[in-house]
Image (cartoon, rainbow, N blue to C red; front, side, top):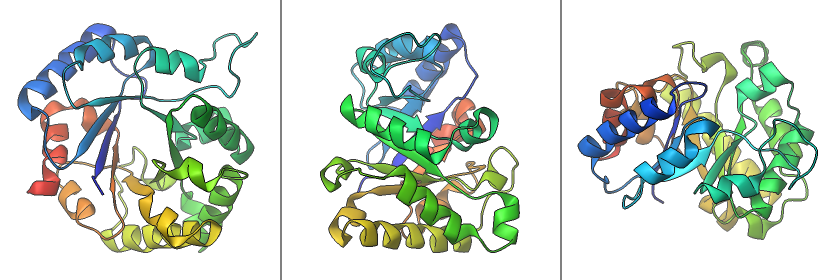
Length: 251
């Protein structure tokens, strides 16, 4: 399974800054073998990013989408719009969406369905809070999220699916989970998916880790069992850091 490295730029980078970042990364990274690299810039820069990534192996993701195909939904973005600007992937239910915008598992489920309808590959984010981990609820929380977020999602829809484990307490805090914690949780996620569907389906789903990923911890994470890639936040805005992360699998 090819490791997936996703650069989530969140609410950073104008169009000019996006093109400059991609140009610098392209020049130094030059279509790396052995990993699939995906960039998720802000909506306003998606088309420019699509143009900048032409004739490369890099792919494009959106940071969110709305669950309706079209209609009177001021300010929202439909999956068809994302396909129109060249997106292959879309991030769904990032912890910042859940925390800051009140997105529920019901909403996550609607967005997963919408993405699949538009032939976009969902990157479904799940994770526990610091309080939930300290009260030993991590596995219970993750199991509930998976079951609710994937409700009535068919096995055939999971062919290229991605689940991102991002412990909320590690997002943007500098406190990443230990390799042992990540391995334990990813194994649990894989086993849960196998029970929900079957073992072959679970083995095909890429389970990636996100949470204060940097150049100095990427190698150990990418060489951890059941870690099929990384969802990178702040470090992906620093070209030398992101390049190091992308090269970590072969280091």
